Length: 123
Image 1 (cartoon, helix red, strand yellow):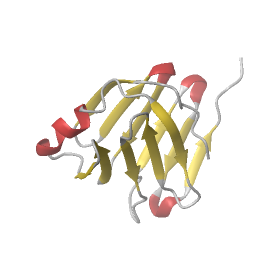
Image 2: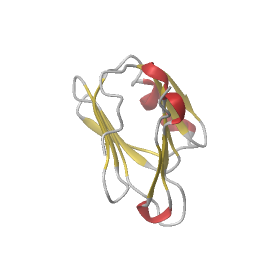
Image 3: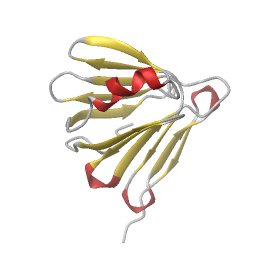
Image 4: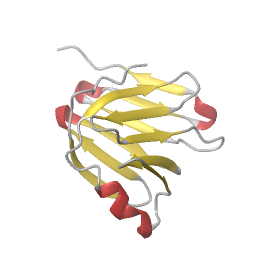
């Protein structure tokens, strides 16, 4: 499933018990489970809520999305121009990630990878 925000740049990141990445166009991704972040060719395992990981997430600032998809098993993959990449997998017991977008768009990866999708409202 194409998440619809290719071409948007990272405007802000917020690191806490969830990792939030805000993009242009009114899109936001929140990841609540450990995920892989590739920056400068190095894979880092990021665990929300661990302060030591915050500097790596901040490196996404200004990066432009080239590809943003959710797969049928609940995986999230966001690739950036220049080679950075964020990959999150589903959790068996918790919501793993959420994408929110303009006009009410929302995609939630529920426990076990089941995707719930609320489509954007047409004006």
